[in-house]
Length: 188
Image 1 (cartoon, one colour):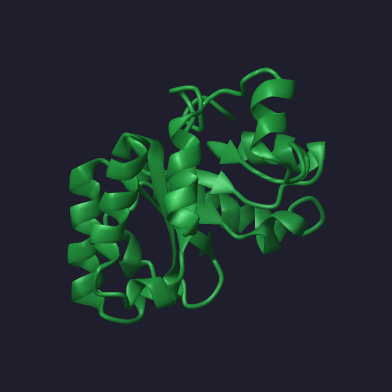
Image 2 (cartoon, one colour):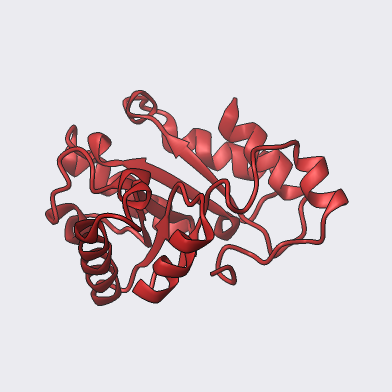
């Protein structure tokens, strides 16, 4: 339901905006997941390039070869793939070369400590360097202060999300009460 609704809503947004949807480990166990994603795109008319699927590392622990083939099929459609909550859990670097991710999303636990713990900065810097070497972008999750945002920009993070930019709100308010925000590719 969430995937179908997200695609349907995003299809009505300005063409420069995309939508990101988290897939849970339970969804990955569904045999018809690829067909459900294709149906959600077809029924909504949303171009696959405007859909980003976020996958947590725990999904990759199960059914490795099957998940790899599934993700390759998504990439062939033009869907972007993000490795969500990177830096928590098992964080195996082999995932970054074994699976076709476009983006790494750094977990908010590193961002929360960024301005008062030098080790968090070092880890974020290393992730950014690694991502660049693998031709991936980096998103920082949970950005709440301008100081953290400025530090993340200085470290080379491509994108940021969090309460600094706004709290969750109805899409109508975002699209019609405020100027259209740049696409995820244009935001800093």
